[in-house]
Structures are given as structure tokens and as C-alpha cells.
Amino acid sequence: FIAPPLIKRFSHAAAGHEGVLRDESGALIIKPCLPKEVEFYQSATAHPNFARWMPTFMGTLQLNNETTSSLGDKPGVPPVPAVASGLPPSDKGESSTRSDATVKKPLEISIVLSNLTHGFVKPCVMDVKLGAQLWDDDAPQEKRARLDDVANKTTSRPLGFRIAGMKVWKGTSNDDYQVYDKNYGRKFTADNVIDGFREFLFSGDLSETQSKLITKKFADKVEQVLGVLESQESRMYSASLLFIYEGDPDALDQALEFEKKKEPGKGTLLDDEDEDEDEDDDNEDEEETKKAEDLKLIDFAHASWTPGEGPDLNSIHGVKSTLLLLRQLE
Ligand code: ADP
Ligand code: MN
Image 1 (cartoon, rainbow, N blue to C red):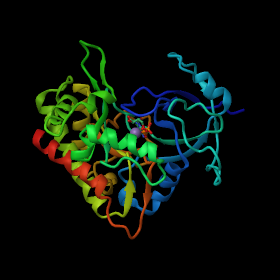
Image 2: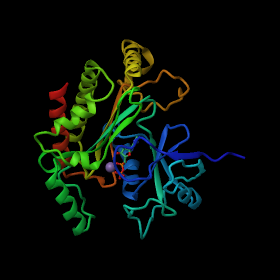
Image 3: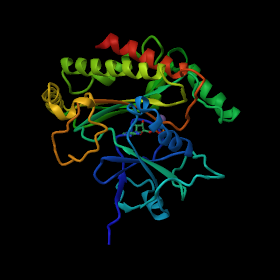
Image 4: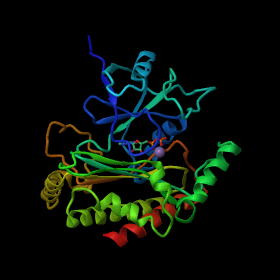
């Protein structure tokens, strides 16, 4: 007898639909998704430079009826069993579109990904949604009009991104996160959205020096993402840059210390740059794998590889704007 894995509610989402789950250990998240996102992850193996900036794809999973219904909307979710499956059915046929209101349809496919907030003591998270155009060719006219309207009223149009949501740890004295919902990011203009970045990076419990250091690390990574996007032929609509940093000052110092230690001539990890993301965590019990920050691209529900079509100027616009703002704050 093998005990079924336990599934819990994921509490560190910064934006997006309800219904993201995690495994018991917290190393994995389980997100209901469209077949298109699964396809994008599966084909990303042919694009290693790009895949480096995506969460690690573990496979798919089909939650059974009892699992999905018992998750309900109750706050204290009891652990529930799930049925793991191999690859998703190739013909996902008829009603594959996910209703915004519910993620509890039976037989819905979920994607299993590395949890980017795992390993952080107090992860602070910002979801920056990319693109002035937020819809793909599959979208009906009504949806295009609705998303265009949001873009026109937010920084999405002029800057090619908007803040979709954030979570900032406000320190042990407050003992709480501040949560910034989707309306928070919609209020900014191109001229003042830097205040949103400042709020994310500088309003928590970190020292000014720590915050600046994190900002610099983010800027350097965004610059790398930009380079990758400029060299790829892909299209992403409504994908996001997901920023995560350690909001606990002591844990951050430890993480930075740890990074320093493994930097110079530490034989084994040399080819892996400063990212322990994709070395399959055999050393999970090793408490030392602390992270200072992480940045990844996420949300590929409307993403595809488009050979011959050149780089994704729509997403690149947003990444460039993000980089410019971060450089002003570092
Ligand atoms: P959607 O917007 O379609 O609901 P997303 O893929 O954008 O789905 O995920 C929603 C939220 O869940 C994101 O804003 C992010 O905070 C969180 N999230 C998504 N993927 C991961 C991941 N691999 N690790 C940690 N958090 C994630
Ligand atoms: Mn999203």
C-alpha cells in the first residue's frame, strides 16, 4: 500500500485564479491549466535557454472528484488524496476552456511545477503581467475588447506591463503579509508605477541596503530574460514575470552568505550559475539551500513557439520597461 500524496492549498499566489494547490512538502505547486500551457512546457525542452527561466515542469495530474469538491471554498482545507497520471490525454476535445469562476470541474488537467516560493522563509511575491496585447488568436471578440479595455486604462498599454498583484512581508512586529490585489496595480500610470515597485521592494522588513541589493539582482536577471526573449521566436500573451525575494532580514543574510560560499571555486556547482532551481533537489533535507531571490517567467496559457515570426515584441516591451524602472531603484 502506498499512501496517496497530500494536497494543500497554495498560499503564496500573488495574482491569478483561485485554486492553485501544493504538495505536502511545498516543493511543488499544482495548477489547473489549459492544454496549451502543458504543450508549451512540454515543448520547452527544445528551448533550453528559455526553459531556464521557467519553473521546472514535473508533469500533469488529474484531480479526482472528491479531491476537487472537498477543497471547496473552506479556509481550513483538510488534506486530500489525489490521483497522479502520466501525460495528459492528447485529445482533450470539447470543453477545454477554464471558466474563471471555478476550477473544480472533474477531469480537469493540472500542471505540476516546482514551487518558486519554496525554500523562502517569508517569500515576497510580485506578478508583473506582460504585454499591451493580452489576448491570443484563440480569444473571442468579446474577450479581446475586454482585455484591450483593461490595457488602455492601465500601464499595460504604454509600458507593456502592469502589476497584477503582490504580497509583501511586513515584519515580525506586524506578523503579517500585506496583500495587493489586482486593483492595486491597475491604478498606476506610466509616470508613477515605479511607486508600486518601490512598495514591493522597499516597504517590507528589509534594510535599505538589502532592498537595493535585491533590486540589483532582479534588474540583472530581467536583463538576462530580455536577452533570451530577443533571441527567441515565441509569443506569450498575459504571461508574467514572477519576482520573489526573501522578506525575512536574517534569512536573507543567511541566503546571501550561502551564495557567497558556493561562488568561488566550489567545484560541483560551477556550471549552474547562481541558480539552484534546476538541480533536482536530492539535497532537500539539506537546510542550507536558502535563496535570496528568484525570477521566472510563468503563466503560459496563451504561449506558443512561433518559428519564422521573429521575437515577441509585445512581451519584450514590458520586460524593457520593467528593467528601466528597476535600474532607477537599484
Ligand atoms: P493564472 O493567472 O492563469 O491564474 P498563473 O500561472 O499566473 O495562473 O498563476 C497564478 C499565481 O500563482 C501567480 O501570480 C503566482 O503568484 C503563483 N504561481 C504560479 N506558478 C507558480 C510557481 N511555479 N511557483 C510559485 N508560485 C506560482
Ligand atoms: Mn497569471
